[in-house]
Image (cartoon, rainbow, N blue to C red):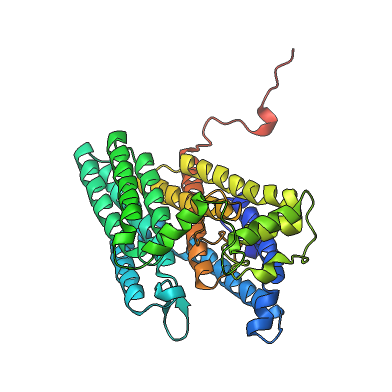
Length: 404
């Protein structure tokens, strides 16, 4: 396949493609560096194992995006949205029953040949389902109010289930939903009421946690919040924790960093290649790397906003809004945790952190946005061609230039 033929399959916003490639390059560099200790513990010192695995899954991700752009119309996501959402609820519930993870959290659902985090599937399903309901509600204010009630009820159920295994993913989905509803012209008073109810629920759970049975992640979430509030108590019987090491990594990075592949702190952090990868980036590449990463996501946000403004139909607008929001919020959470701005929680840095099937679901999210971009471009081009008429247009040689 020559270059010209290959370019036909690379559709959508070209700048987002550039951002994806840049994130991939950064991911491979940092994952290779941060998985050295893990390779010696689990792969007999084969340091190339994890970078090859990362490269393989990101390759699958690129393939999934290209397939979505060329063979799946955006309208199909509208038709399957209801089924995808209810399937996500079933999978999340199955993860709680049969999943495995730290302290039996049920974060990962084993399938024999592979495993994945149900919350990652839920992110994609929520974007499609909320987008469908909001699009249907644009026809009439009463329908929009009914759609808003359905959304809140469904998201409340899903987030309640997810919070038992992964509290931060529940917060991420809740925030994404609220932003999508805001864009969908749901009345601001309703949104404030929902936000207030959500915050009140979290506060009640926090203070009631000592009185409740140790179900899911309640005690873990409370302990992490307490540790963040009482930041002076940095040392425990187990010594330094991961957020302590993250601060040390950032301090070592300085302006220019210690150099690519020269991280030492990653050897002491179990999640250096995942939840705390941003701190390793700063350690190796310094303030420069710490600025480049959020800048790439800022470019993605800007281009996503342009795609949303260019889209003309309701469902693609909300689909693109959800895709942009979930990626940006997840990136903010990861970087905020690594820099100590918020309590420790488990959210990978999109398309940079090491991962398997989570990379594929992230690719699906990028694919949704690029699909909207591609179809919008095609619709615009078709509209221009349809409205163009050569009648009355002078040939080039007959056009007279006015002289001053």
